[in-house]
Image 1 (cartoon, rainbow, N blue to C red):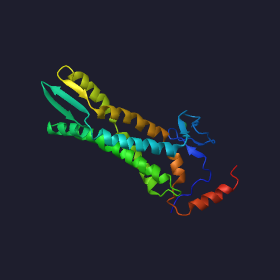
Image 2: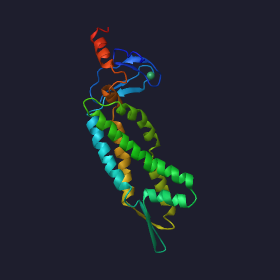
Image 3: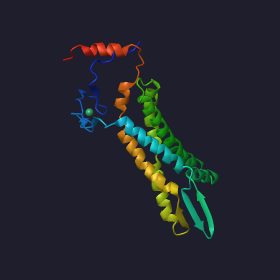
Image 4: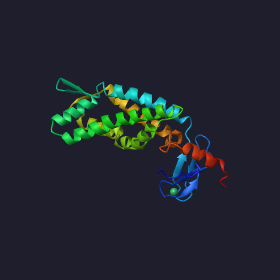
Length: 223
Ligand SMILES: [Zn+2]
C-alpha cells in the first residue's frame, strides 16, 4: 500500500519549521522563502541539469589529475621527496597515524570521488525522458558523500603545514595543489547549480499508477 499523494504539486513543507505552503511559479534564478522562518525553500536554477553535468564532468577530470600528479615536493639537505594525496595518506599510515590516514583518505579521496560519481549518474539519469527510480535512490544518498567531502579542509591543513615547515625545508608546491584548489570551487559550483526538486519531479514513481492518478486529480479544480 502506498500513501495518496496530494494533488497540488505546488505544496511544499518547510524543511526548517514544517510550515505547509504554496510555492509560486518562479522565474529562473528567483527563490521562494518561508514566511514563518525566512529560510530559503527553493531556488529555481537556470539550466540546472546541463550546467551541473558540465561542472561534474570538469570536476571528474580535475579529480583524476589531482590524484595522479604530485601535491607537494620537499627538499631537505639535498634530498628530494614528493608525494601525491594518496601517497600522503600512505606516509601517515606508515608513521603510525592510522586514524588520520583513514580520515584523509575518506574525506579527500573517497568521498569526493563518490560526490562527483553520484552526481554524474544522477544528472545523466535525469536527462533521460523517463528517469529510472535508481536516480531517486542515488539522490537520497548523495548528501552523505557531500558531507564527508572535505578537500577544502585538507587544503587549509596543507597550507598551515607548509608555513610551519618552510623554516626547515624547501617546499615545492605540486601541480595537484593548484588543481585541488580549482576543484574546490568547481565542486561548490556543481552543488550550487544542482536542483534536486527538478530531478525528483521527473523520477518514475514507486507506485506504478500515480502518474495517472496524480494527473487526473490535478485536472480537477483545486481552489
Ligand atoms: Zn519555515
